[in-house]
Image 1 (cartoon, each protein chain N blue to C red):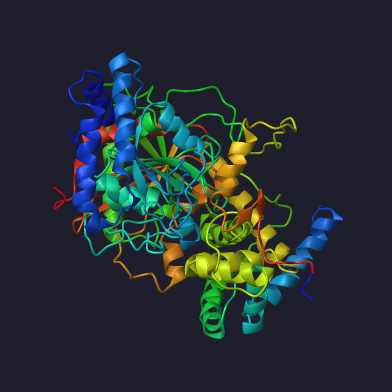
Image 2 (image 1 turned 90 degrees about the horizontal axis):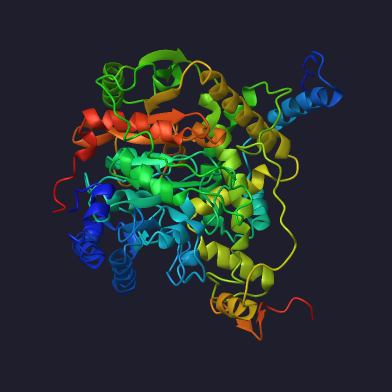
Amino acid sequence: MIELSLADIGRALASREISSVELTGIYLDRIARLNPQLNAFITVDPERSLAQARAADDRLARGETRALTGIPIAHKDIFCARDWLTTCGSKMLSNFVSPYDATVIGRFRQDGAVLLGKTNMDEFAMGSSTETSFYGPTANPWALDRVPGGSSGGSAAAVAARLAPAATGTDTGGSIRQPAALCNLSGMKPTYGVISRYGMIAFASSLDQAGPLARSAADCALLLNCMAGFDERDSTSLDRPGEDFARELTAAAGSRPLAGLRIGLPQQFFGEGCSAEVMQLVDAAIAEYRQLGAETVPVGLPSMDLSVAAYYVIAPAEASSNLARFDGVRYGYRAPAYADLTDMYCKSRAQGFGAEVKRRILIGTYVLSHGYYDAYYLQAQRIRRLIANDFAEAFRQCDVILGPTSPSTAFRLGEKAADPVQMYLSDIYTIAVNLAGLPAISIPCGFAGGLPAGLQLIGNYFREARLLNIAHRYQQVTDWHRQRPAGHA
Amino acid sequence: MAPVRGCGGKNFYDTLYGSLVYHLSDFVTMSLTLEQVHRIAHLARIEVDEVEARRTLGQLNGIFGLIETMQAVDTQGVEPMAHAQDLAQRLRPDCVTEDDQVAWRAAFQAIAPEAEAGLYLVPRVIE
């Protein structure tokens, strides 16, 4: 059962082969047994999940079934869920029981999916390893002494170890795609604005976007169908006609289903900086795509090398503003002792935030401060434009851009924790996509030294369905994505 | 003062801006000082002690070393991009949308560190 696709699980539930209560019980049992060594979940609440599963079973009995009805889904602890502890991986919110649902959570509820638990993450999604969590690091199921990536590392580890059929994540600079790559999953960041950010705790509002983490592109499509849609409560939500993101997957195809597809290979993705072993796997994937009928064209993204620098101005600037709301007044942590109001703010924030979050708030405060705004913030926004223009130019020559997701396989716990710059550079291939606001997916493309590597496919705006199909066709002729880590029986 | 780059048909402000970027970049490539770290921390309302400030200083200077690579790029005339989609801010009618406001207020205040009679309590500000 735990290897079935979401569509097959849905069929098993609809035909009453298994009940949602039984299915949810299987996963809750796995979490109880296997989570202690992974630390993938921050909160599990079996009674609450089983109550939802019972309601889903009633719904299934009445025949009111939607694609995800009765299927347990794990959610990154950045999504507010009514009556659930919602911590964002921070001591600041370690006592925050949300009074309301994020739109994403609400949409899963409407479809009758079961909330299986809240997953671990880098504090306020700031990190690439899930090591900055107040609740301790998450281990990678493929090697327990290695990181699962981040910031959605808990969601990735949970799905990889089959503690959940699928999960949600958020991606501000690679936080869905990089953990997907490091844990052998398929993970998609849609076009900015496709999924509502309402109730998703804000890090960098012009970059944050939710998305699915799952075992296949086809599963991602079903999750996206549930998650995407206009929301008047998010001022940047895009009002577009609804679409079925799985619509291209079922089309009949011959031996060359991608004939005519032009895949752009930017030299910036294939230079130094990527480990040879990952590059070899990416090259093999390119050969596979040629077999499927695609042709490759060289493209250039000349400003991409500047994306990390621009990102570490823009994201901290927005974060310093967003995180100003954590003041110990209306919710969250308040220091036990203080002299006056300012001292209460300063101590609550000093005690409530971890080191990486403080660092980024300080960077943001500095780059926005008087005298530095133009040199840093405006310059970063101008470079952001150059990067977006690069992609626009590249998409005149190709339909999709391909490259590695991450320059290496999973690194060791603690390996980069002491050096923020090294950690930041692990997102070198993913950040430009957020700056431009484009959709991208990471899919498994093989193993090096027993550790998975990810292939990144970047599409033009609103080409999610096409991207999912391109990923799906690869998954029909390869079985990397079906590989499962040993030792989590 | 750094040289002003050629205006090449750009307007006065672009020319001025070009010189400003040059000027500031000369200035900001200097490392942060401990005093600046304390000042930023105060602006951000985060208490830092001496030990933390020193450690933070080294890390921030490392990060700014990375950020500085931006300064070498000529972005004169490039429109700053604040957002992925060029959209106008959507407006909504200025009216209450939640039903049962009393219950919602109670729910939100139940999770406050200190609340009383529908108000959030903080240390006295005005004597």
